[in-house]
Length: 240
Image (cartoon, rainbow, N blue to C red; front, side, top):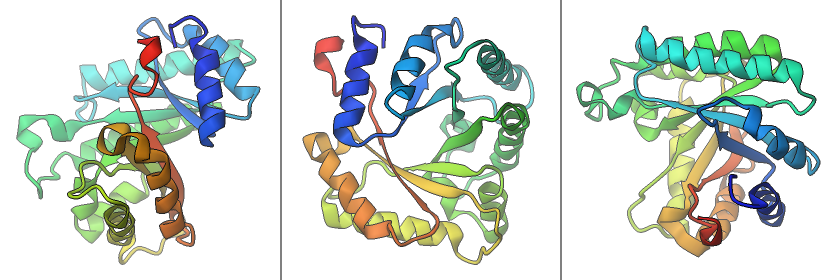
């Protein structure tokens, strides 16, 4: 975004790839530098969510308050700009901490859901939806744990990374499997919809075709909300 005509390049890329929503990492000095990007993308009917990351915000205290302060800054930004941030996209990763490692270790989940709720309480009155990246580990929980997770936000984004063979058939099967796993035994009307994310690092130039294959496999599932492609400056080498 900081490269010359970087916002225009991003807009053109989104238009060429059928992308209608962008998760933009928020600069350290707040949302103001995003103003031009937001205006440009909105002109092409592309939503912009502010991507906020944290490892420690699942625990009450300094890290969570820092996250909430960043949400408050976005709310304040929206009050003073015609080009508004459309939503908050959370990347809170307590599973990266040593004490939270292990496939069945979801002791951090109540704190994570609490953090989601506090962000949601700030964002929704300001007409911003909250979405959150989640690892597949969270979908392996008990019925009660999955209910807690899937009623915490209106949308979640499953990071479906590093599958074994990385072929189309496996991505189709894995996406169906994890959607089934997530919602098994749950029938509440307020369950989150789920976006499924793949990344350039796993599929390279094949990624667009893989995403369309995932759409074909899941478009009839009412819980499926489409795909996301997660890229971190790896598709625009000239702008590095």
